[in-house]
Length: 88
Length: 198
Length: 252
Image 1 (cartoon, rainbow over the protein chains, first blue to last red):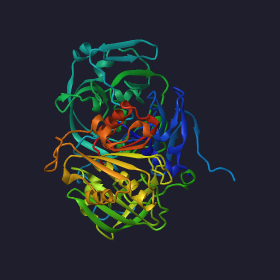
Image 2 (image 1 turned 90 degrees about the horizontal axis):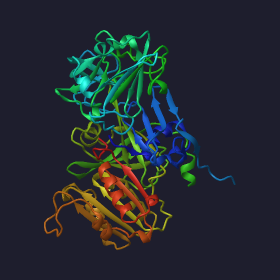
Image 3 (image 1 turned 90 degrees about the vertical axis):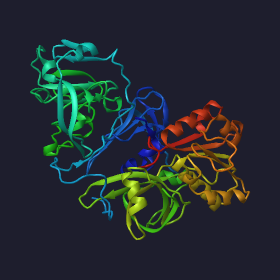
Image 4 (image 1 turned 180 degrees about the vertical axis):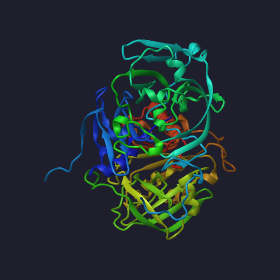
């Protein structure tokens, strides 16, 4: 079972956040390597979406959707660095 | 519900008695949370660990020497597909638990690759669960959980852990991989227990 | 990139099919109007959701084929054998039908028309769709950034956009297109059929010292093979952006 690019999380994450989280830099909690969410390895066929670190393969993010709820597990990430428009 | 797409039916079939919200499929979808583990039977091991730390283990040879059965069951995935009358070959958990001394009420199944799922120990007994190594007359394919997977068809199929390598018997319940992300702790398809709180 | 920063939450929107256009015997382009569509960036995709009357639904992702435009977009859909969604989109959907979609999605697999760096596009089958959006956007923006497209297809009749690509190349304004046929070549084609290899990428692509932006899109095995070839021939992995379509190579 091969993976997709993290870009493919954009639809689901886009319903939860007002900014494009695929463009966020995330530090993997397992190996410490930072990278963009868009570059994670995504397994999207499970009863939820899983993003794994492209360096060490450990899980960084898990997302499940119910009809009226979403569950987001970010324990695999130590931080998300989100691009913000520069203050004038 | 989304806007109706005129003329769209999907690839399902109608007219069978299925749990609520399920649709029948003829193929066998592969769902996974990670890369397919490649486990060779030479190093395969199944370990049942009791609440006191006692371990009962089988290598592939010992496992395959156990009495096994033909199993024909319906399976239901929480993502809404169902397959009826699927055929498996496997060893009953009743056989594996013979001689395992335990007062535990709960079990956590563990897979190669790190996946876990929890269920009451009572749901593994009395002809309700097997460790299956053949599907449809052939050795279970890796993408479907081979060399061996847990098979517990009376619950949603995420409880039938692929690539099973161990079962921990516990006195306290511990939510597994999907149960800790909003999926129902028990998962009875006939009561449509998909998500936590259903 | 300011536009990608604040979007508001994505929600499902209803578009209306305004035109359909057969591209090949197994693919067609669907033009949609969506009031309130904010436009998109070249390379982005949408998620499409189909719902049956009994509530059964299926969802797939499709790359946007058209250059940015307010209120409208085009998708090119390859019909897959046994494709539950693609067969509906290619065979059942008609002008006037509604189509529910969510997007635009993805700020990373995007080409910025303000960029002047050379661009290498490597497409496998229907992976050409988002790359075509980049080529069309390049023209719409008046960009002179040099583009090279290497397009791998099974046979000449499965290639998308052939006439448009030929016309664009004829203009001589900086787009080069090379084809790689993996099963059947056109009559008179000098090379035998075969997969993309390092020689093809070297002769039809940019050398690493030109520091191109690279976009690779298509079935997952194709993308992985091409990305590995590029890195092994010295391209900076950080400059290579990939969009894997999944094992079947299309979006079902």
